[in-house]
Amino acid sequence: MRLEKKATVVSTSVAAILVIMKMTVGILSGSIAVLASAIDSFLDLTVSLFNYFALHNAEKDPDDKFHFGRSKLEPLAAVIEGTIISLSALFIFYEALMKITHNRATEYLFASIWVMIASFMITAFLVAFLNYVAKKTKNMVIRADALHYKTDLFSNGAVLVALGLISYTGEQLIDPLLGIGIAIYMIYSAFPIIKEGTLMLLDAAIPEEDIGKIIEIIELEPAITTYHDLKTRESGSHIFVSVHAVFNVSISLYDAHLISDRLEAKIRKIFEDKKTHILIHMDPYDDSEINVHEDIY
Image 1 (cartoon, rainbow, N blue to C red):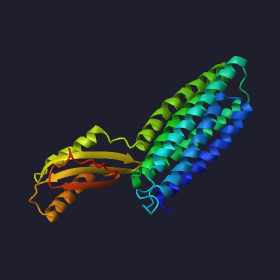
Image 2: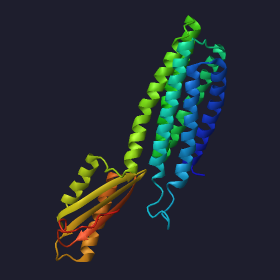
Image 3: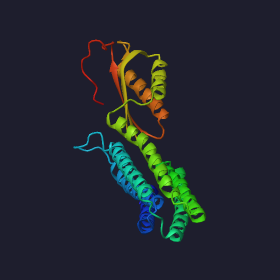
Image 4: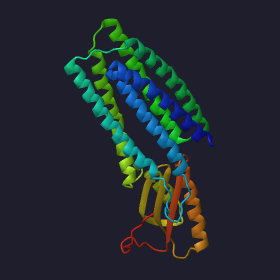
């Protein structure tokens, strides 16, 4: 088993343990902050399971059914994940408002504090491990997982501080107010995940900065007189680029092919952390105005 997959197995196991711990104490104590943290850990469990699934399936080679591979599993799951996070945040928000309205006291406060201390320590070790794997493998999925659990580390710390303040001051309002804050933070964090995943599913172009680098490489090639129909899209860890390059009509197909290979190598250097697929159409003249066929690459 690859180190990346081992990392997802570890993160999934840790998340499962944290869910059981927090959910049990959260339900018994009635603490919205602990319950919110438990739901957040459940989402971590879902994400870690998906990461394993994505690493296992998204990198499979194209076949007769999936000619371009399965890389869109990543953005599809990102949209689903972001939606689940948002719905869970709304549930936490509702529970916090209900606690404020009915003035329910937090019970088992001592047990809640110890659960959050254990959760903080376990998460800290997991973040350190995932950072180690991310640096060693340079895998973007693991790097994102490490960043996600790092935000959980701050959230766990905030819940721990809130429980300590409740224990010291006896003010029960701190718990639902923190729950509302966590809910707002979860929605705020989910929005860019949904946005990025949706843009990938809609085959949005890559950032303008990267397109500019591709254009610069093409324009610096003296054998190319002009170009048109430059199209790009991103799908998970894959970048797709297609362009019509216009060569002098007298150039041999062999030389045009060598130049195209050289351009592809330069473009791939822009996206060293991605798998880049480049299709260069070698045109003997500029057919941009009469070409009615659309690229599907």
